[in-house]
Image (tube, one colour):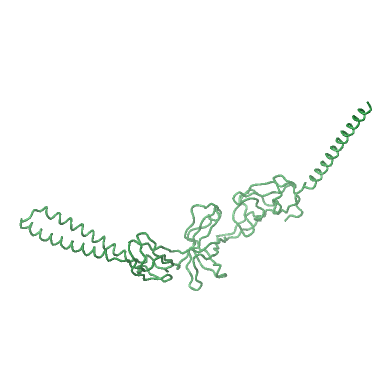
Length: 354
């Protein structure tokens, strides 16, 4: 009887100890959670005010030079190259002979065709005399006349094929590449050489959808090549892209006369400076305030110590600042550092505002 009483007493004490331990652990966890909430009640951030500023009346865009005229020399004949007259790097004028393809077989065929044509014409003269003397029927001369027409057509075709064996420059420029040598066998459609003319260059730049509307074809542009800092080259807009690329930018083509004093090459980098009619005012904020991409831009607006995520529409970039078309008002505070730790509606603490 006493043993059973001791056993129940022991079990009761164990249960009481377990209950007390669970209670103290729960209290400790609650205190830690409360302390964590207090610690994370405010996220430290830096903010700045949206400002109304006078925007610059110019736009700078970077790009690379491309040759204004460049063309592959394509073979229109088949055969073995018997002579090459121009080497890589040489200057060629339109019509200059670059290479010669063997035309011996074509010339033999042309001689045979011309001999046959001469015979047919003699036959035509004899039949004409016979017909005038009623010694031959008139329908006999029809076959001869058809034969003459066929021979003349073949003669023209052979002369054209022989002319094609003389591969000539289709434009004026430097022979950038030559893909054949004496003894090479080529066929129709084979690339023989490449001619590049750098007297004029195209500077290809990309601009945003906001900036492209300010540009006009024929507009003057100041171009500065990276290899000649401080040297300004005049240019003009010759083409503006009609369709945006995957980055929502438009291609703008600028024609530049290649200066002799500071010669340029295709592939060099340069900066184009566009100047517009007048300055204008607009809202701006630092680029680093943008959360997300420029196409789907958002910013954290701070009001009453709360960070509210808001969508904005952006305009052009001006150095480290970017224009805001809509979504913000002048004087509103936006977060510039600390966005990574924020969520919509988070409580923030800004020790200093600009």
